Amino acid sequence: MSDSAHDNSGVVRVDLKRADLSELVKSDSWLKDAPLLLALGDAAGQVLHQATGRRYPQGVSLFARDDDSDSLFLVLKGEVRLFLQQGTERVELGVAGRGDVLGEAEVLDGHGPRGYSAAAAVDVDAVEIPRLALLDVGDSQRTLLKFLNGVRTQRRAALEAMADFLQRW
Image (cartoon, rainbow, N blue to C red; front, side):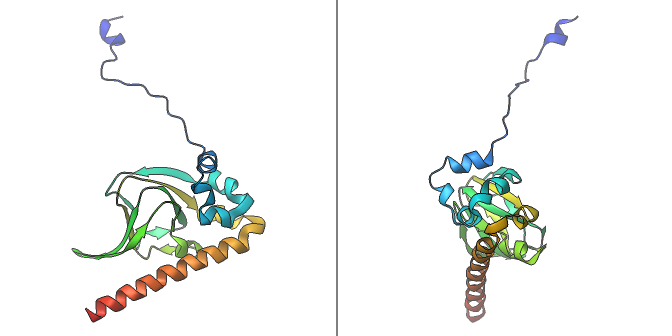
């Protein structure tokens, strides 16, 4: 064999371990008391096992307005800017931080286009939970729906207040 067959210069091998999101959340004293996880109760572990954790570097989009959707995001770390954009004009709607959820309306409605855009304001770790994982939470269903409806109501009120402000401006 030639020396080039053994030459691994430039190649770095790294063993990656898939994070157990349920254990990650349970070990974090703040996240384990996040409103979504409290609403899920005993079903939280089952739901998190069906979720996908991702890291979004600063400035990267989690999703864009009008993207088709059937998932909910839970912010584990960092801040996510929520905004509407038309052309070059951007209107900030708010910021979602650690323990906050995004995509509640689409989950409650069954699917549909996202109502706003979301991008990482700083490096963000988030969990994307498929809608189907949230449908089979047993006794927690009523509490979960109440929580998600509350989030939707608050977010709609903020959107309406912003639209009202912009119309007067």
